[in-house]
Length: 210
Image 1 (cartoon, one colour):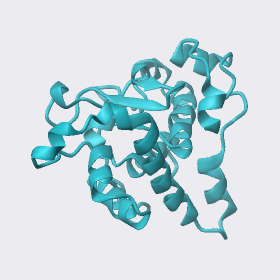
Image 2: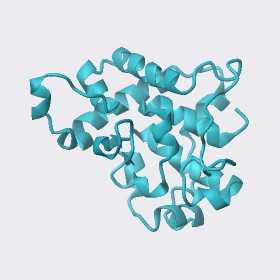
Image 3: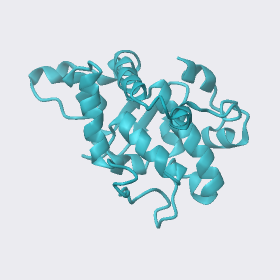
Image 4: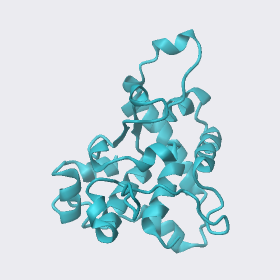
């Protein structure tokens, strides 16, 4: 895809299983790079359904790359939105792509996430927690999601991302290199883009390495 911001948006939708309409409105302030957490303040169901997404090593590279692209391409909107665009709102709104260019987008990728989770050996229960689905049954009330977030659920998230990346075409070096690349300047908290966006948060290198 020619537009790197849209490219990262679709990749992150696939890796997170997040509803794209919620992902569109995420801001730099929603990311905790040190903890590798993305907060979704207004998902389907409103603020009372707000939740945190644990990010795999591959996932955390998406906002790093897209922030760099955003400050270069849409500097006036990049300070407010993770996925800036030339739109009335200032962020990505239209999700549709030519199917010949990208066969799945939007909620298609959310469905793909659920399918890949099963292939990765992630339980249905854990997949629902990662996707912020309502958990039916009396026992669901005994589950404290935040307690699982930074340990168990992150391991499940990493298993899903690893399954996705293992399926990349080995005969296409550029395709394999793009999602794994992170410019050394972007890993430096003193770099002007990251310093401006995350306002001095530390631990970026160690967060990616975990």
